[in-house]
Length: 376
Image (cartoon, rainbow, N blue to C red; front, top):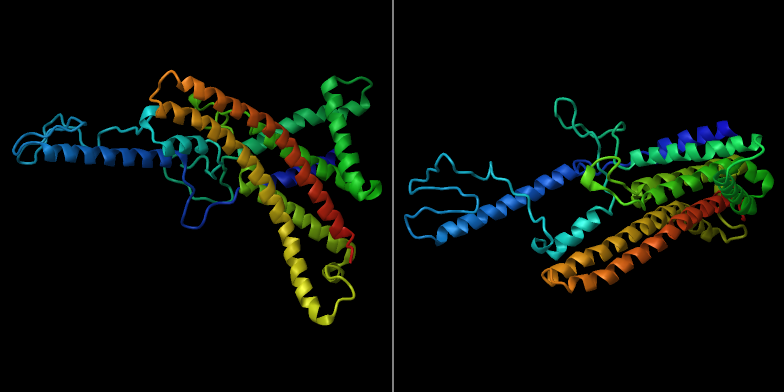
């Protein structure tokens, strides 16, 4: 059983760990590129302000901009002038200087998981091309989940040979038995569900670990790379669609294996239909077959992303109200309910992490069982 579990782990990691690249000709925008664009916009705004001040000065006088550049009547700058190429503009950094859009954009950027390629440049500083060997920002956290699962469940496997085990191992063993008995066996039965139990057990705990890791706050003050910036792998459709494709492939493989290729697609259409309705019903059933993994993808991705966005919105309101009140003491009064709302949603999201893993796995069990045992 351990060998099967290791094979299933490698298979699911290889498929679910591949984040899909962006559209052709539109490479993923990294945090460094976003910062460069922000600095360029700040420099442009600063240059526009300098030009406006220079136009307001008297004719023939020297114009003094915010960047302390000096120009004469002949258009020659002095040796100490700093142009746009040498100036440094970091954009709005304080709450009072940020617009409401900037406040919430800053919060949402930490919540939405963008497909960002790690190790974007090689040793010579050249930008790498996206390919199958590209490592994306969610993949290290998927590997972290696999490592944690080995640390947690290897003692569970060895506990069956021991007389006494610790309380944590007993709790995790109880979770494994619950997934097997209450989820797999209750739908598929004991005889048929025994061979599928390792697969669904791994799927459930893999999703749980990815969801729970996403609840840990990031620490960008120590760095902007792994492991200080934490991403929720299931908060992006690039991961959930891979998990749903695995469910669809399992449905088709075992459904065709049980009923045959012709029998499987023939069984999609109810018996006894009038002949003119058969093509229409066949098309509807094919669409229904493809809608199932699509629903799995959107349900898991949307629920995990929505919780993070609500928490980020509640935290963003703290800074927004502080800006609206210009940092007055009453800002603390508005911060308390916003902070309370963020904590409340955080507690609910901790429950949602387990619920969404249960829903995804339980629906996958039902979809695969229905493909094997067709009603029609």
